[in-house]
Image 1 (spheres, rainbow, N blue to C red):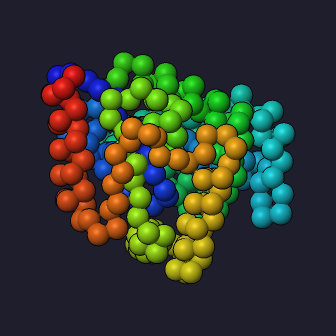
Image 2 (cartoon, rainbow, N blue to C red):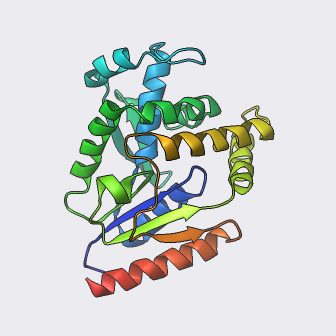
Length: 231
C-alpha cells in the first residue's frame, strides 16, 4: 500500500466518523485529522470569551478574534492518536462536552471560520496520505479525494451512541437532551448556507445503524484497498 491517497469521510454527527478514520489511518500509517475537533476548538474559544451562549452569539467579535486562535494536533503515544490543542492548551476532553456540541453547528456556519479552518485542512493534506473526517471534506476541502465516504445512521441510534459515550465519561446527561442535540445539529448542518452537509456525488454511502465496529472497519478497509490498487 505504497500509493498514498486522500480519504474523505463525511456524515452526520455521532456516526462514528472519527473512530473509523482513526482505524484506517493507523492501518495505513496515514495522518488523521478530525476536522470537527477544529470547529469544536473554535467554539470552546468563543464560549470562554463569552461570545456565545443560549441567548446571544457575537459573530462579529469572533471573526475579529480569529487571528488569536491557534489550533494544532499533537500525537499522544499513549492514546495512539493526535490530541487537539487550542492556543497550546490540550482541549481534547473539553471540546467533547454536550455544551460545546450545542453551539458548534452555529460556529461552523460562520463563513470566515470555515475559510480559516479549510485553509489549514487543505495545507495538511497537500502531500496526500491523509484521512480526514467532517461535514464538507469530500465536497469542499478535498473535492478530488480518491475515496469519499458518507456515513449515516438513524438519529435514535446516533443519540444512543453519544449518550453512552458521555455517560461512560462521567457526564451527567439525559438521553432525550442528547437526541434533541443530534436532531438540531442535523438540521443546522444540512441547512447552513456555507458548505452544508451533503453527500458528494461520488461518495460511497455507508449506513452503519446495524453494523458492528468490526464490520464497518472491514467494509471501509475493503474500499480503501481497492482504490489504492487502482492508483
